[in-house]
Length: 148
Image 1: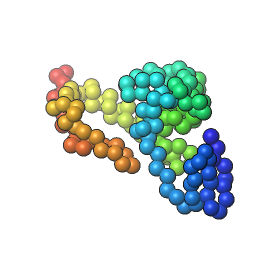
Image 2 (image 1 turned 180 degrees about the horizontal axis):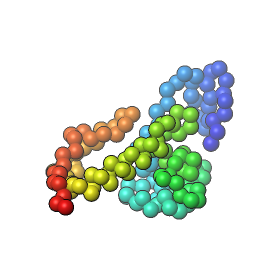
Image 3 (image 1 turned 30 degrees about the vertical axis):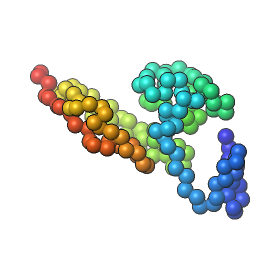
Image 4 (image 1 turned 120 degrees about the vertical axis):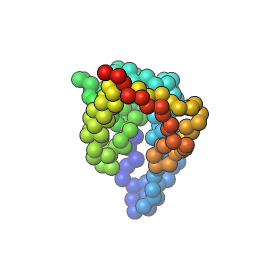
């Protein structure tokens, strides 16, 4: 919902006060795995973004409503800011479209030429969070060139 403009002191909505000049950090990791917004949020299901869906139990979230034709990836507007891998609004990553196109090209090239296998277990990798999410212990892989 709209927080409004507030005044020189800040703004308030539903008991949460934001003071002028305050820094706000949104945990995108938690947002994207919020079970009140997304059904089975911890399961990798990219097909979930092909069709519209409503919130699981969150009364105020408008749900996910993809535009037709489908874009390259779901964005913050289609998901009413329930999914925003590149941020949103005026502070959104300006290179999001380029990053997605570049990642598809690089990934396709790598997968055409190499086989990848995790060297160890997923638990060995670990996760560390902050402004971004990254591995705690690196992501050790066994990489072998594909025979053509």
